[in-house]
Image 1 (tube, rainbow, N blue to C red):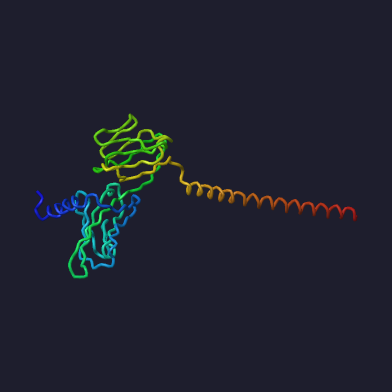
Image 2: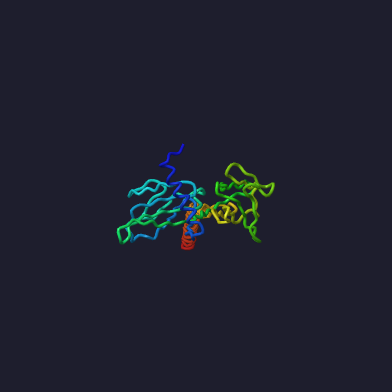
Length: 254
């Protein structure tokens, strides 16, 4: 059972969300596996404390100089989230407590919308698996070229027989060229949480270039001895012609 001390921050957050509803939020985006910064824009203030929340919980922020955790403070009140995953997408609320000119502690409240981007490649005829059915996901759409079509919706399931769901994974069976493109995950407010660009898997260009380099090196290795043999054959032929000419001159001299 949650103790009153643990319950208090969540109650304060709930009151904050009610009073803060309808206010503008700061849109931020990051690549899956990368980092993103929630900038507080208050570097010139004397910061007393910062607190970070998502819609469901309080998020501890490491404030040490060399943090090893995923969520760390940078500067006076910026927050960095490292090694982004799909589940990091959504809303965040940063409370910044600072001292004003009258030496009184005031609170600055900031709201962020974090959008995660990703790129993946899939081989034809294989299954495309998107682990994007988060607790705050309402629907998944694909850009068909003529508009966005709904593939999955909470409470309704998938939209066709070529799709299925396994826990938090949306599966597109037997991937084809028509399945390439952009997929996006939206919340109940129709705001984007995740966008995934899916392409047809092809041989890595660097591997191809490496193969070409290897081929050219092999070509160089076998061309070198062939060139030496040709040169030796020319030298032998030249020596033979000189010898025959001298022999013929000697016969004439006799």
